[in-house]
Length: 177
Image (cartoon, rainbow, N blue to C red):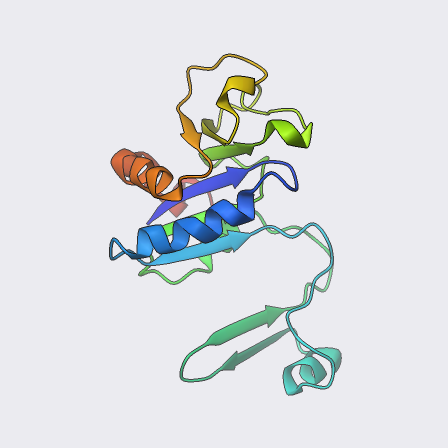
């Protein structure tokens, strides 16, 4: 599988870019998965549902499946942050590309998503794992860069760039876990 990260401050457009990259890659016949970092407590389950009740009763893991979907919920007994590599190891083996949103401090190769209007600093000058910048304002980058600068508003071009770089994104979990 191939893995690429997308890093940037909140509001930079990471989610929108990833959302648009999924169909751009799928139309090439590729199976795409996403790993998303959440900063805050979140829940995908709802009070009153069977799975919620099982978790509230103390189940360590609850898996629910139908003929179209599977969801696994795991409660950490002691709060900790799993590494992106541990999360990648949880994914189905038959995936072609994994788009990782967040995990800005990871050792994955990443595309920085940056917008001048956000007023946030860019990270590409200080992070050796950033290998390209996707932006809607290339003329306003805070520092000159030799990195590829991708059009944030052209997800098909970003997908084509990823595919052209292909082998660069090959992921071998034994190098990390």
